[in-house]
Length: 315
Ligand code: TUI
Image (cartoon, rainbow, N blue to C red; front, side, top):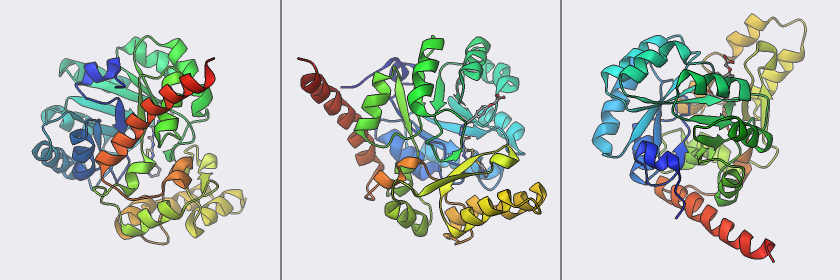
């Protein structure tokens, strides 16, 4: 069975995290992943701090296994959330879209395991020096806010630079991807896009249908001109967004206004003017199933591929 030091550190059975997807990752999905032996994560991007508190409390009722909260550091209420998770006794945090350095003393004091998502060696090293417990290294194949490097080059460079455990993210949605990440030196994997179609995932059915219909070339990165690149499905909305970015007569403020609230509209309403954030592996996601089946397919699949590859490739 695949095990790693991240399992011991967090008290989980399998070294797999569910991505803390904004507006998507709620108690229902997080508890299902944690009950399956992975690490479920609740997103802090929801209808305000109290809504996230309610999801944490609900998750505690749905599972007795470890789960965590992902804090989107660019959100206006990030400071409030940072405090609230301490009050609620959350034991594991991941952070995204920035440096969590200012909150580390408070979280370490509370005995929280802190695992920032990083997209470069420089930030990974800074985080390790600041005393975090592990990192998620996220390649630009992933959905949502993305960095510059892709998983294949990012993971080994971060693994070489750090002593602490590294969880690989970006473009991983099956046993083959997970096996590859372990061979690159990762101690675990994080999966987002495939969990969008999990039975326990509460996104609008239209979102799930769009993921299930996606192909290899269905995603696009927009927002580079705003300094906040985001990968999402190609839709009339994301294509209009890209067009506005290349039109010099449109101001950044107008583009920003066009995009505001678009993710929520997709997740909650299946709105055609929504932003359907998804990773490049959306084209490989072919069926809706329980989160438990996804967790087991990825982890048991990785084990199978590692075994088969060593037989096939080594004389
Ligand atoms: O955070 C993410 N992915 C996200 S957040 C999000 S919410 C959103 N809502 C509406 C519009 C746009 C976004 C959707 N997806 N992933 C973690 C991640 N963090 N990926 C890359 C990074 C990152 C990038 C640069 C972390 C740190 C960083 O540099 C910080 C520094 O200070 O150097």
